Length: 217
Image (cartoon, rainbow, N blue to C red; front, side):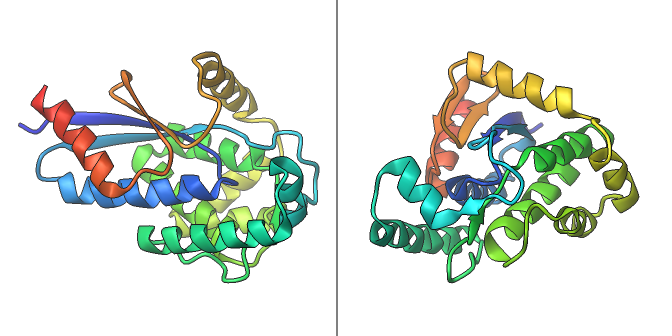
């Protein structure tokens, strides 16, 4: 009987390295599926919780946040795009235009896990990353979120209910608070079997080595 590896993937939709790590994790899981089963839970983390409606120009945001030049931002974005391509995401060739608030996306991810299960949550996570980084769309537009919901095989009408009230808001804030209190302040952070922490957009082979160590134990 194969062991089950539980994975808590703490991340934000607005984090390109979280998308890269997500893609590499999926590659590793597929490659290791003969040796273990996996239970993946996506946990919320907001890089920009105070971001207002309408977002901010991405280049402006990154130069202000990291104190780097516009040229360096564009060099960094080109590097991320290549890493994302290798991980299975084709980012918009011009880079993301704006940085948006992602709280509603996290609410929908919480809903998908509670009412559908972790496999549907994984599908929604992938579609939300696609919407944010691969498509030239307005992430503040509810229709963008609805499109991701439908592509993931979830109910648009139920998603609309959630966005029109405060469902799952407390759940998201409670989880965010718990992970910050546990010492997680950057993403992606990946917790294996609630004991072992991996950090950053690791390559697939690094995930596989971690899985091998767990199975050997």
